[in-house]
Amino acid sequence: MILHSLVVEQAVDIDERAFFVKELVLARGVMPIAMVRKRAVRAPTTSAIARPEPSEQAAETRAPVLLIHGYGQNRYAFHLPLRSLANHLARAGFDVFNVDLRGRGRSGHFGARRPRSVLEFIHEDVPAALDEIKTLSGARPVYIVGHSLGGVVAYCVAVDHPSRVAGVASLGSPYHFTAGSRWLTGLTSAFLALDQRVNLPNFAVPARAYGKFVRTARRVVESPLYPLPFRGFHRGAIEPEVLEQHMALAMDRGSIATMRAMFSWAQEARERKAGDDGVFGYGRRFESLDVPLLVISGIYDDLAPPASVKPAYSLSASSDRTYRELPFGHVDLLIGREAPQLTWPLLESWLVKRSRA
Image (cartoon, rainbow, N blue to C red; front, side, top):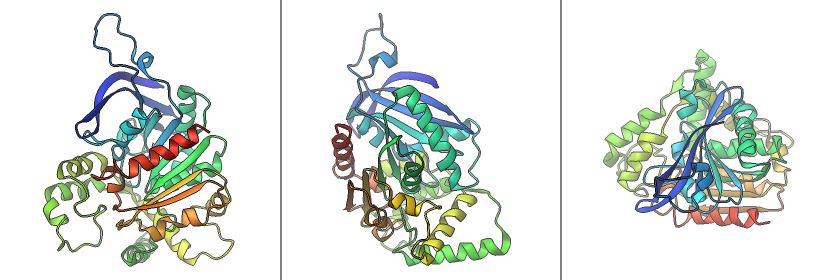
């Protein structure tokens, strides 16, 4: 259901701007799931006389693309006022749907409570989004692009809905969560030990607080003397004004239930034996799935190192699979100063080639 539509002029990257048809979409599933839809405009209309409806100004599209954000974030991970991967893909001719999973962004504003498990994203939120995309964009299979946990959710959704998913592209998505990071491995053990002792309630994890901290103490966080093992981005890779926007807009909230699921999954992955499932019960089925697959990791990613990301590619039996490592951290894969020259064209060319097939 389209709640609102208009033609907007927005940035693709800093001063590079374009016109788009922007629609606020509500998918009516178990929970209300909000998406922002973007399509390129055929040509900007300046006359106030006989101006067509926004939807009539949208250009034809190659294929629908669904963007899924990661843990503790929202749709702004893919769209900032100064730098927008969502706008880049729309300008390239795709019908782009940027979703807020339950409890985040506009979905939270519409009353979608925080998740009780990752499976709610997989079984309810994304299928509701796919249903709405089919209604609005036609019965074309959808390319799913996920960042971080969003990529892992995309892997699982592709297993459940193979005929509806044209391909999966993941960016900084850990298939073996915590692999390659002794700090994350230690945090996993500490969290699970505490949870077993006190059974932590499913309260919100305030990712916004970290965003506020980075905005307030950016120079300290980007200093080589910063004492914590995690930044979530490579030092100096993002311009201050872009980093400010990301931390103010994209950082949202997580939940203890999702964190518990992720850390339990990490522990299971370390103990996994041949024949075990893993990845929220989807591992073996995903690995045998023949779906076009693009896996991108960041060389400097301190939350999803290449060692945790690459197994999605190396274990996959897909006849069309691609793996790339780029010189980024976790967030700068999407919004770093070099992302429009490295990540974005790689993703765009992968999508264009397969949407022509």
